[in-house]
Image (cartoon, one colour):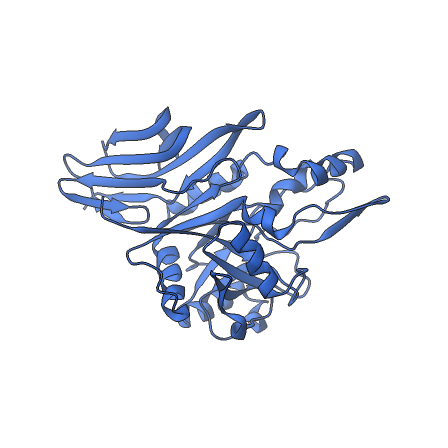
Amino acid sequence: MDAWYEYSGNIHVHTLHSDGTEPTEEVARAAQKAGLDFIVITDHNVLYKEEEGYYHDVLVLIGEEVHTEEGKENHLLCLGIQEDVSHLADDPQAVIDAVREQGGLTFLAHPMERSSPLVPETYAWTDWRVRGFTGIELWNYMSSFREFATNKLMGLLLSFFPQFFPVGPLPEVLSLWDDLLAEGPVVAIGGADAHGKTYRLGPIRRRIFPYEFLFRAVNTHILTPTRFSRVVEEDAQRVYDALRAGHAWVAYDLIYPSDHFRFWAVRGETSHIMGEHVTFGEGLTLHALLPAPGHWILRRDGVIVREGKGQTLYYRVQEPGIYRVEVWRQAWGKERGWIFANPIYVTAD
């Protein structure tokens, strides 16, 4: 396949400008320690574009998470914008339209969530009349913990051993993604929803999800045709172009770094990567290369067409459809979601 440059980042991050606990510079420092190339800060209903730039070798981009003042539903991640759109929060479609007019991107944040006795509130997406959004947050890492907080003992275990609980994106969110893909391209991203908060359970106070820990967990990896230049405006455009095109995958890097994963289609001397469209025809094949052995699953329109174990996938395409790869891997005693690639769209003509 053609040469592409890979960068890893986290797209859902909060700072002191809303309900996070650290300033931008310290959040960027945590991202650097975790080995990330970029982060996108999405504070609630506020846009601090003047803080965009390189910090500690990490590209820090500024978007916002838009929702109503009550904030109970329809949270929208707005990226690549220059002007605040939170005044439109009562009308999610108006927000999507306004972001698109600015050349930006929109992702439905934590579209589905599960509650528990200790965390009864949820912040799911409910307005399914909306159209024109870029994609969805397939895996919100902080949401992964909600359903496990069934009592104080479980809350205590969560605070000391968080890695033992999340298994992968919610199955209902994976199904939602397949349903949305049937209507048109929808880009999947993953994020931390990082706040760095300290929680109290009786006499115990503990920061159970530090920024650095979260930045080592669920991330979004992108592929760009050219290298980062360290010019903020140019590199920001590279990130947004990759996300818009779906040249990306979601990875649980805490299990094992997903660097160098690839999923591509080949016919003759031409190759196509995640997010691209290719016309169905004789000799079209799909390939995936994993950085370590895993249980890989190839789906067409949400249905499994091939699965296996190892580091390579090869499949001769039999018919048009939306093909995506997910990879699961053993970690901490059970099989967990590791890599979820954006699809390759095989069209009839």
